[in-house]
Length: 262
Image (cartoon, rainbow, N blue to C red; front, side, top):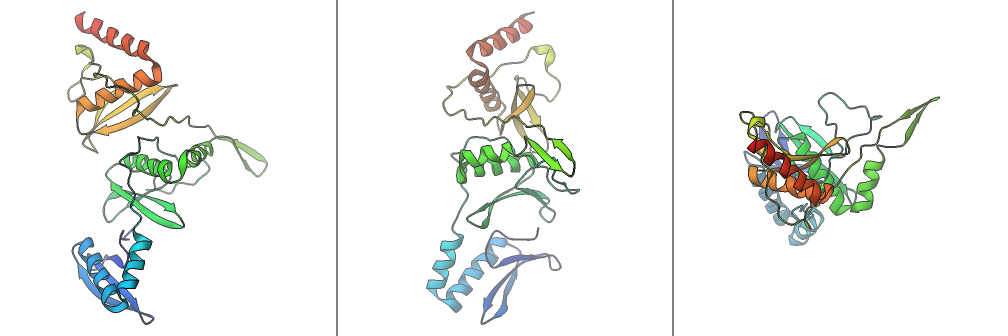
């Protein structure tokens, strides 16, 4: 909370501004106060260049040049904290997620090579958790991702009592190999005001986006969030095709068509 994603920058609550400062000759030197976080970071970099030289600036950039890029990573299910983990009031129930009171947003970050790396800030706790899981999948590998979820299962020993934890069966949705599918319309009588006209799609008011999810093995599974209702419906249909089979997709379409004609 109050931290910046840039080196040399912090948020000063008293002044309600971003503060840039640099460490020179054993002392912290104030550079300035800014309304904009990026502007503060730019002036910090200029100060490093002037007072420590181009070599120090290059070295700093090298150390902090790690940028989280999830553009090529499919949606992943959030990683809930263990039931044995005491979740404080106002904290997230998901691993890798915290609430930033100043920004009034959920903050996702991941430890890579001994350093905390910023993933992003989000309106929705679930969206932050999904991106954290995607970052784990990309930067730590499928094995680490699996182990993170496996820790939810098994038994935890506490004193003389054994507490069994129910494992959350997780599905990592990867639809890259699934051909396009048309959305599955709901029957006319099943569409409430403001709801989606497609099966498997709801509107998330908090995120102001369409949400696609599918029911598998007795649990709702997150597919993704979308600006477009049709895109969410198409991905739901693709998930049915992949995880339930073509026959299940055809059956769902036939069922909806009968409801519509009837």
